[in-house]
Amino acid sequence: MTRPDPRQTAALSAALSRAVDLSALKARADAAKTSPPTAGTHPSTPAATSAVIDVTEANFESEVVEYSTQVPVVVALVAGWSAQSTQLLATLEKLAAQDNGSWRLAKVDVETSPRVAQLFGAQAVPMVIAIAGRQPVDAFNDVPPEDRVRQWVDSILDALRDRLPGIRAAEAAAPAGEEPVAEPEDERFTVAENALALGDFTAAEAGYQAILAAEPHNAEAKAALAQVQFLARAQATDPSVIVRADISPDDVDAQLSAADLEVAGQQVEQAFTRLIAAVRRSAGPDRDKARTHLVSLFDLFAPDDPRVAKARRDLASALF
Image 1 (tube, rainbow, N blue to C red):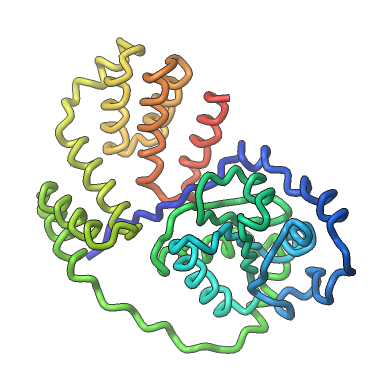
Image 2: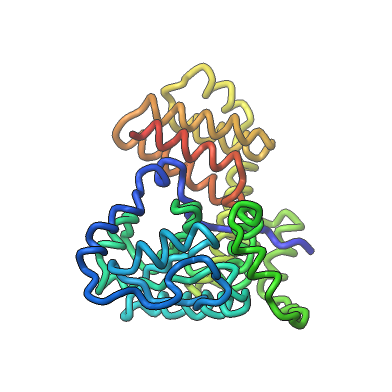
């Protein structure tokens, strides 16, 4: 059975990429340095240097910005008091060790390097940002299970392999490893998925809610629950709402319902365009309602879906 694929991340939009100037810390870093750089700070041989490194404002320029011209650098904004930070770091460190330097994990303690956190507008920890070619390319601020983080890392490597020379070099130097052993199926998910396959949205929702009651930070259950709730909502919506939304563009509730039906009918770009137009037209609570609904629809798709990427850029333009 195919499990609903949440792939839930907070992907950075092109607007954020333009807004984040990673060289902004350079002047401060140069002024803060009190000793010469250690060997291996230059990115010419990424596989030969540490795949996991502690980063501060002082070495951010060399160890993240410049290093990202050879391989992606995954910046993890964390805090020692955060249990979620500890959990996510364990996963990232494990994957970085497995990948033989094809990407680097840069750990940043936000308490000792607050300006790095401010650079990315971090509101909470942990937050993870992928940097490539001196620019942020993707991000998330949840604690996904290991397989989802692996999926995210692999998608970045696949997208950048032909642009960053260090990826192929590191992969070519990697020793042959054993095939990963598939993890056993989680029976709780199987029960919920069976209910969903039968069209019993109530039972499926209850199944995912039960998982979250036991594991509040289970990102897979959160994303699957969002999908089930969307399907139930779309099925209960009167199809005539699309006509009502078209003739009453200022009816925000009608726009939300119409967008749900369009996404359910595979008219994804049309739904996104509808809600972005609603954001442009409205103000106050109505505008926030349209924006929030649109962002919730993004979570139904893979973060690298080009339709989502375009809609995120259009939404940023509509907002700012």
